[in-house]
Length: 320
Image (tube, rainbow, N blue to C red; front, side, top):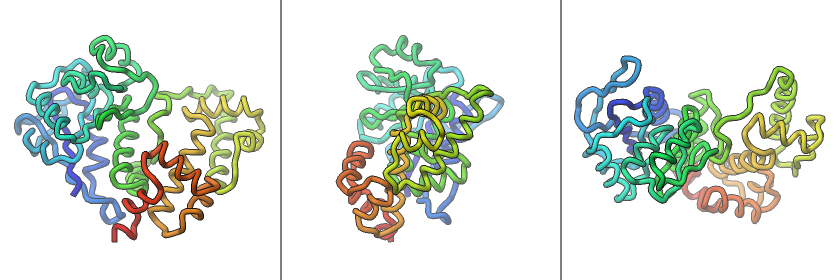
């Protein structure tokens, strides 16, 4: 069973605790999602106070961290809340062991307090980026990502980006189908890349019609991923010039049309590799890559693996 530790101490955000609990603390094995063992870990068994009159009851102490496959540090209501020394020491030991550690939102400040982010790239909420730079100058702060990884340490931007990172960690460890099943039950988008902007421009009333048009274009593209779609094709369907289309598309989604298309094709290929035993050339064709070579190149650059290795790790046949 995949073991996840939620690190708890006074001042952590109830929202982030809820996200972690929803992703890893709900039994979805009847829908094909792996079994998770989520534990609330604190320096001692005393209830942990949170904002809004809420409390969290730990069920393990910090000694359990040596058993965890993944450690998640929630964000903080007051981003400068100092973590207890035993928590910082335990995080340092876990990192030395090679355990994956993820911090949501201002949880990056906790990792920085532990010295784990010195000389590494990290992200936090866009409104806290300058403060993180000032308080921890040894951290290379990336200003416009949703989440980022460096040396087995993951950090995420604010609020909804924590959901994106948690689903990405599920996808990385258990495959795209498991992450998509959890996302469906949470009624949220199953896949936003970490490279997307933290926030997107909200359309003005005049732009509402364009937003509807672009949604229809994206729906059309998803139904025709196997075709050699181009930005010019999508722009023509939206009735816009390619430059205008790209500008509106990026403002609405936080990513470019080409990057969005690639993300959808990767997701489609992952699903085919997990669910079917189709030969690689057919998977590449159906996902719109054109050739197995092209698909392999994109898997290597974006997922740091090959299609064959991905199938071996995550296919239903392999699981059986």
